[in-house]
Amino acid sequence: MASGEEDGTVEEKETNNKKRTKGAIATAWLTFYNIAMTAGWLVLAVAMVRYYLQKGTHKGLYRNIARTLKFFQTFALLEVGHCAIGIVRTSVIVTGVQVCSRIFMVWFVTNSIRQNEESVILFVVVWTITEITRYSFYTFNLLNHLPYFIKWARYNMFIVMYPLGVIGELLTIHASLPYVRRSGMYSLRLPNKYNVSFDYYYFLIIVMLSYIPLFPQLYFHMLRQRRRVLHGEIVVEKDE
Ligand SMILES: CCCCCCCCCCCCC/C=C/C(=O)SCCNC(=O)CCNC(=O)[C@H](O)C(C)(C)COP(=O)(O)OP(=O)(O)OC[C@H]1O[C@@H](n2cnc3c(N)ncnc32)[C@H](O)[C@@H]1OP(=O)(O)O
Image (tube, rainbow, N blue to C red):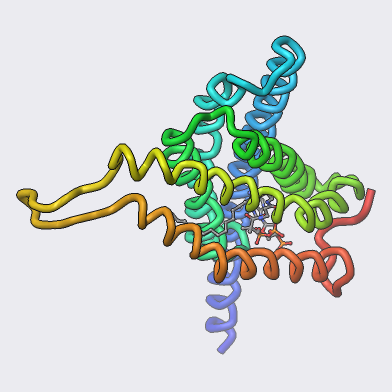
């Protein structure tokens, strides 16, 4: 009996040690990741402000920042991995929809429009403000020094920013439709050796329609997070 208890204690200790090691490694990685992403989106913000101040127009702005934007937005795919391996307590599906829809925008939609559209600037500016806030929230939270205004901004700004971002994205997809139809880009017409047809134009319409069921789910998820963190029983971090 005694020996069983001892064994249990040793096993428990080993498990706890493993958990601690995994916890420390995961925390170190997440801290690095969030600092890198905060810096990346800050670089984008500075580049946009500089461009606008120098040129006095938004024309050409997207082209100027496109590579950096694509890089950091694509890097965010790691967040789906973070959820999948359980180092952050977030749903893989919610994160997957959020990240994939954005990657789709930067790699497949903005190529098919005049990038001077105001809607492109709208969603890029909204994403940038959101991500600087979100990643700095995670960073300070991990470092146990979370200023209240960052926590407040994280769980309040999305109320306006989310719909604005979605409006920018939908207007951008809509603006791409005429060119996509004319050019037949990314489409596969029959007959072909695979005997498969794909019409990117209709695919984009389906993507636009999919915002109707998907966006409310993301938005309500954030409203629940807001209630939990700002008004709820579980406190993420000591304020200030
Ligand atoms: C092929 C094409 C497909 C197309 C499909 C189209 C459909 C599209 C539909 C809708 C599209 C939306 C497009 C998006 C537009 C915009 O972004 S507009 C700009 C405004 N956007 C926002 O405000 C974004 C809001 N969304 C988010 O914040 C996230 O993406 C989220 C996944 C939706 C929600 O985040 P979640 O992680 O669940 O909430 P949090 O409260 O932030 O975190 C929960 C816990 O997890 C911890 N955590 C999460 N990530 C990290 C991290 N990187 N590092 C450390 N910790 C992390 C966090 O601290 C929380 O911890 P606990 O409090 O301890 O639980």
